[in-house]
Each structure stands twice: as structure tokens, then as C-alpha cells.
Image 1 (tube, rainbow, N blue to C red):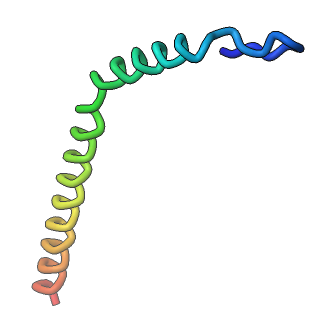
Image 2: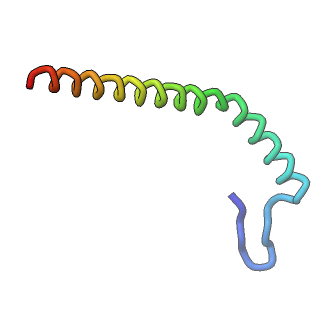
Image 3: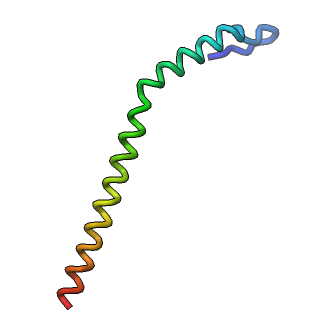
Length: 64
């Protein structure tokens, strides 16, 4: 993105970079729900797994 050649170091000024950063952060905000949903799904899967493991242990204990 940034070019670095000899005396010409940077393509954009600090002001332009801050403007780009602000724009990128705004664009990322639309994806904030994705991580929340993934976390909720992960928690639900772990809870179901624990329930199934408990049920499996109960069934194995009743077979003995």
C-alpha cells in the first residue's frame, strides 16, 4: 500500500491516512454482529456437548 523508494517515502499524508482509517473502522462496524453470533453459537454447541456427554455417562452407568 505504501511505497518506499529513496527520498519519496510515503504516498499519503497523515491527514489522508487518518481519514482512511476512520473509513475502514466505519466499514468494519457492519461486521461486529458476526463475532457475537459466532460466540453465541459456540456457547450453545458447548452446552449441548456437555448435555450429551452427561446423558452418555448416564446411559453407560445404567448398562452396568
